[in-house]
Amino acid sequence: MSPHPYRLGFAVKVLGAGGLKSSDTRRWQNEPHLSHSLELLDGVLGYLEAADIRMYRMSSGTIPYGTHPDLPQFDYRRQIEACASELARLGERARALDVRLSTHPGQYTVINAPDPELQRKSSLDLEQDALLLDSLGLGREAVVVVHVGGAYGDKAAALDRWALAFERLSERARARLVVENDERLFHVGDVLELHRRTGVRVVFDIHHHRLNQAPGLEAPAEALAAAYATWPAGVRPKAHLSAPRTELRLVKRRRPGERRAREVLAPPRLDQHADYVPPWELTALVRAAPGPLDVMVEAKAKDLAVLALRDQVARFDGEVALAEEYGSPGVALPSAGTG
Image (cartoon, rainbow, N blue to C red; front, top):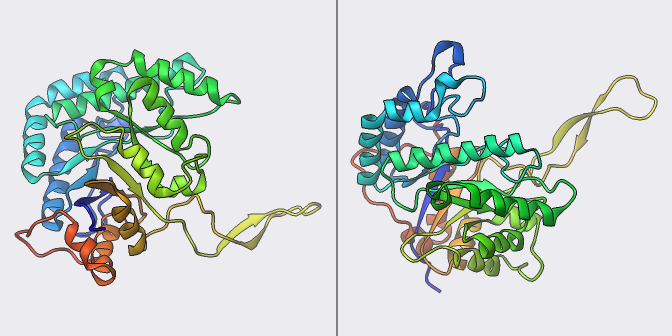
C-alpha cells in the first residue's frame, strides 16, 4: 500500500543552529513576558523554514506565569491583550509557512483531579493555551494536547470527572482540546470512550500504546485507525512517535543492612524516550495510517532527530520519504549531525 502524505515535527527545544530558546524562562522577579517569547518564536519559525519542518509544539511556558495563582500581574489574558499585534503577525507568518503549531501542558495540568482547586487551575491552563492559539489566528489543526490524568484508585470515576471537566470548559477550549493515550493508566480504549462521551479528538501515541494496550485494539494499525476516525473531515489527525531508551544504566540502590547506596548496573526503562527514533518505526506508522497524518517526533534529540529520520528513511524506504510534505527551502538545511 502506498504511504499517505505526512508531516514531521518536534517539541519546544531547538538543538540545531547552535540551539535556540523558544520561550521567556526568566524568573518572575525579572518580569518575563509573552512579548519576549514571541520574539524567540519568530526566530524558531525562521529555523523551521530553513529546515523545512512544518510542525512544532510550543513550550508550555510561552506565557510566563500566565495562570499562577499568586502572581496576578502575569495573568495570561492581560499578556495576550498586550501582545495582540505581535500575535497576529506571528500567526500570519506560521500560516504562510504552513507550520502546524500546538501546545502540550505539563504533568500538573490534570482536569480530572479530585481536588477542585487543582482542577480549576488545570482548566485555566487549557483556557490559556486555547486563547493563545486563537489569538495567533490559527485554524482547527492547532490543538492543545493533554493526558487524561490520574486514576486516583477509581479509573471509572476518573474518566467521569474528566468528561465533566471537559464540558465545563469554554467553547474555545473544547474546540482546541485533544486527548492522548498514556503508557500506564489510560489506554486507547479509554480515550476513545471519552471521545464517545464528549466528542474530544484522540491523538495516538504508538509508544504509549505498546506499553499499555487496549483490549481488542492490540494491533497498532487498528488502534491508530480508531483514533484517526475521531478527527473531523478537513483536519489532519496527529500521532506521536518515539522509541524507548536502550542503553545500560547506572543507578544507586541500597541493599538491606547497608548504610550507603551503591551504583549497580540496570536495564533501561522502557517508558523513557530515546534520543532518536529508528527509521522503520516511522515507515511502519505512516504505512499503517488510514490517510494523511502529522507525526510529532518525541525524541530527546528534538529537531536533530527529525532531520536524522529524513536521511535514514530515504535510505530504507524511499517511497515513504517521498510522501513527506515539505518543499525546497531557500537556504541550506542544517545537518542532522550538528548541535
